[in-house]
Image 1 (cartoon, rainbow, N blue to C red):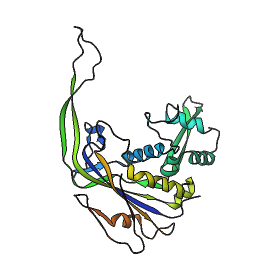
Image 2 (cartoon, one colour; image 1 turned 90 degrees about the horizontal axis):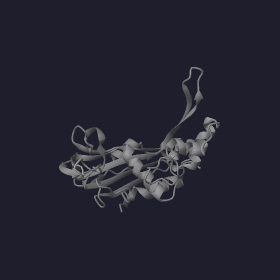
Image 3 (cartoon, rainbow, N blue to C red; image 1 turned 180 degrees about the vertical axis):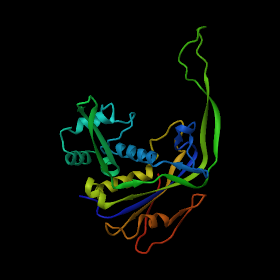
Image 4 (cartoon, helix red, strand yellow; image 1 turned 135 degrees about the vertical axis):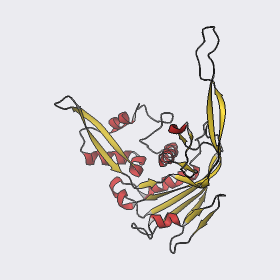
Amino acid sequence: MALSKKIDFAVIFRVKNANPNGDPLNSNRPRTTYEGLGEVTDVCIKRKIRDRLLENGHAIFVQADDRKTDDASSLRVRAENALEKKMGSADMVKTACEIWLDVRAFGQLFAFKSGKSGKGDETGVSVPIRGPVTVQSAFTSEPINITSTQITKSVSGEEGKDGKRGSDTMGMKHRVDNGVYIFYGSMNPQLSEKTGFSDQDAAAVKEVLPKLFENDASSARPEGSMRVEKVFWWEHNCKAGQYSSAKVHGSLILNADGSYKENSLPGLSPEIIDGF
């Protein structure tokens, strides 16, 4: 059964002495806008949502290599193991959505090679699935301060000509000193009718948002350096929604110190959930 009502949500989280989302095109420095605001991309956020859903036992299509629950060596192999190339597009969409929660939620593009054309070129078929759950990138309300530290990286495992270990190399490590971010999302009942994203699926996403950064520690993000402060969950009373998502999201204003202000919307109040 599809989603019974429109849902909007928002998440406020704090970063302290961590790199929440490095930019590989900028020496892996924390992402910032031209105005200096901190940024965490929607792709990064959805990755963490998928990881938490996977840990909760849900079937997920896009799995990280270090977390995968099957022996598929790539997304293509995982798709081919579950979907038959001979399926029609409608059957392929239906089957993929029945199996994987993240496909029902975020959508997915499935591309299959079907053989050689008369000219010797490979041909194929692409099956796009548009998901009902959208997530925006996270931003800070004020410019952030980034500290860069030069480090020594012991990456050489080879011995030199004199029998000694090869020389270490120098590198840089970057961190956000202190930043408060906010991101918004929405769940669209009309699009959920295409994928079968249900009220139970929405509840599964809601359950993992307060613990978005649990089991996500790394050298760039030490344990406890990132935490969810608040989750805001607006459930409208109909599929069309009482207000536009823009108006709902705009009713929550984040201050630089992490405090927030809510502008009341008659007939629609958020459930506020503390982070873990």
